[in-house]
Every structure is written in structure tokens, then in C-alpha cells.
Image (cartoon, rainbow, N blue to C red; front, side, top):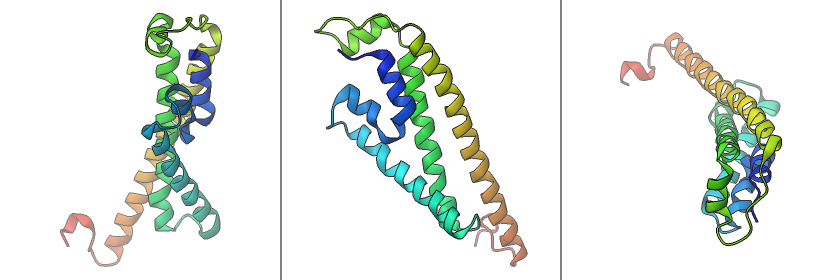
Length: 151
């Protein structure tokens, strides 16, 4: 039996590692394994910022992967938590006994996933746009060889 509430909370707490996918589909799930490298790339970017400072360009490329991985996991938690119990049981418990009604556990998980997911996505966008603008300004100061000049 696969619990909707448990799947929601796994996605919320460890979804960026793909554990929610492994819970629902097993260890052979390719999409579950794809979460891990992007999370690791983002964590490497955060470590580079800690070691080298915010001006590290490689960190600028790596950090958004963590934000996108978190946002993806939170979207999964929201989808799981908002799936009607009957639909959930048809998809994830077709042969066995249905899971008990999800109740408030799934609702609280969805609310927290909305909070974390929105924060993660907005932060990722803001961080990326800020650094893109900084690169363009720096390029202009160094002689106008930015991407919008075509060379």
C-alpha cells in the first residue's frame, strides 16, 4: 500500500534526492535518480560560494540547479497531496487495499510544499537574473563584448 500522505511528506522532506519517486516506483526509477545529480551540483555551487565568495562564476551556474530540484520536488508534493484519494488508490494501490483517507497530513504537506517551492523558485530566478545582469554590466565596462553585441 502506498500512502498519499507519506508520499507528500517524502517529497517535501527529501524530494530533491528523488526519494519520493523511489517510494512510489522503486529503485529502478530513472526520474528518481535524475534528482540526485542536480541537487549535488547545486550543493557544490553553494560550497563554492562559501569557499570562494559570490563572484565565482561556476557557482553562479551550479546553484540554480539546487533551486530547480527543490522546486520540482515541491511540485511533486503538491500534486501528490492534491490528488483525490480515489484517483490515488487507482494509480498506486490498484490490486491491494486502498490507503486510508489522507486527511490533514496531506493538506499540511501541500501548504508547506507551496511555501518552500515558491521560495525556492523565486530565489533561483532572482539569483540567476542578478548574476546575469552583473555579467552584462561587467562586460559593458570592459569594452562592450557582451552577448547582445554579437561577438
